[in-house]
Amino acid sequence: MNKIKPSDYCNISKFKEGETIMGIVIQKFGGTSLRNLNNQSEFLNLVKKEKQIGSKLVVVVSAMGRGGEPYATDTLINQLEKINITINPKKKDLIMSVGEIISAALVSHLLESEGLPSEALTGFQAGIITDDNFNSSKIIDINTDKIQKYLNENKIVVVAGFQGATEDLDITTLGRGGSDTTAVALGGYLKAERVDIFTDVPGVAVTDPRLVPTARYIEKISYDDMYRLAINGATVIHPNAVLLGKKYNIPIQILSTFTDDNGTLISNDKNNLKITGFGIKRQENNSIISFIFNDDYKDEIKKELDKFLTNEKDNLINTEYFNDQASIEVKNELLPEFLQRLYSNFFY
Image 1 (tube, rainbow, N blue to C red):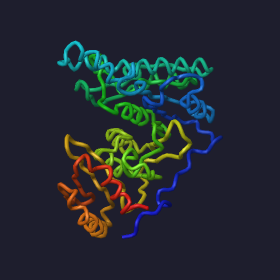
Image 2: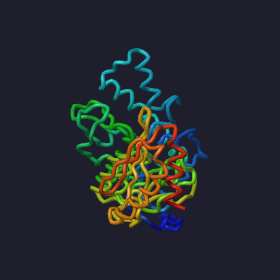
Image 3: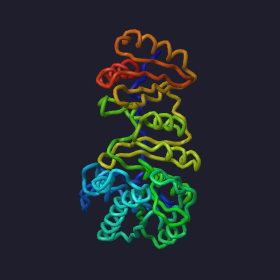
Image 4: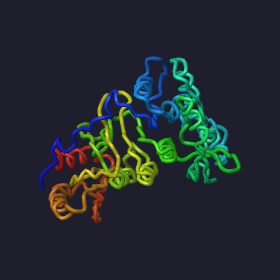
């Protein structure tokens, strides 16, 4: 089969500077995007730029930083575990919600300090109602009246992601990656023009760039293909957020906070590539590589993959084929080099 050329993964254009967009835009910022908030933050420049082109803006924020940093979710959970590792799920949700609330308050304060009127809301204040499956709740409704009121007052609404409340007013959280879900759900209920998810990588790569540094980034991808990557280990966006994007047919852009790369557009528009990418799931001793491809090219890809795997038989634990993907199991210590060879065989 023909290898995939770099031009097949060329960048898309962002929305044009100076274009007047009076609709609602959701911007979601991950924890690494919110470190060291000040008037020089890249985050602030991105918010200002979007506001200047006329968007009504809702900013969804995660807890700042990652595990070990003061307000990261894992750090907060550790405070309970120091007392007793057996934790009531309701109390765990209460402390897990704190990091995003701190982010919302600080971000809103920073915006107002820069002359941008803003309101900070917890998930519940933003109208997000969930079921009572604590630590992994599902959104069942959103009352957007308060958000709409502030948007009509030309304020930037900053919402604490990852959280909501039950009808009995118990605080809940949405599970890992739940701020993505918050952002896309709000986008759907508010009928937003699009959702921009800002992170520390410049889009969706065909495989984990921490393992294959040369992995190229995808110009555009369908909801269905992105969902297949997400459930098979791609952590750049939560699978539930992808499903919501498809439900509401709302474009989602995955963008870097720290570079001007054009990112990845997730929408109904298929890219028609033969190979979507390689998802990675690590287990205790072994890793599962999900080789995800276009079913229309199944026979061609299977033939080429069989040829590759024949030369790798000493490194394999198991291989299975499905209609639109192959599952390849290797030992964890062999994963980086194996994945690099697999990538090199199918992409230049």
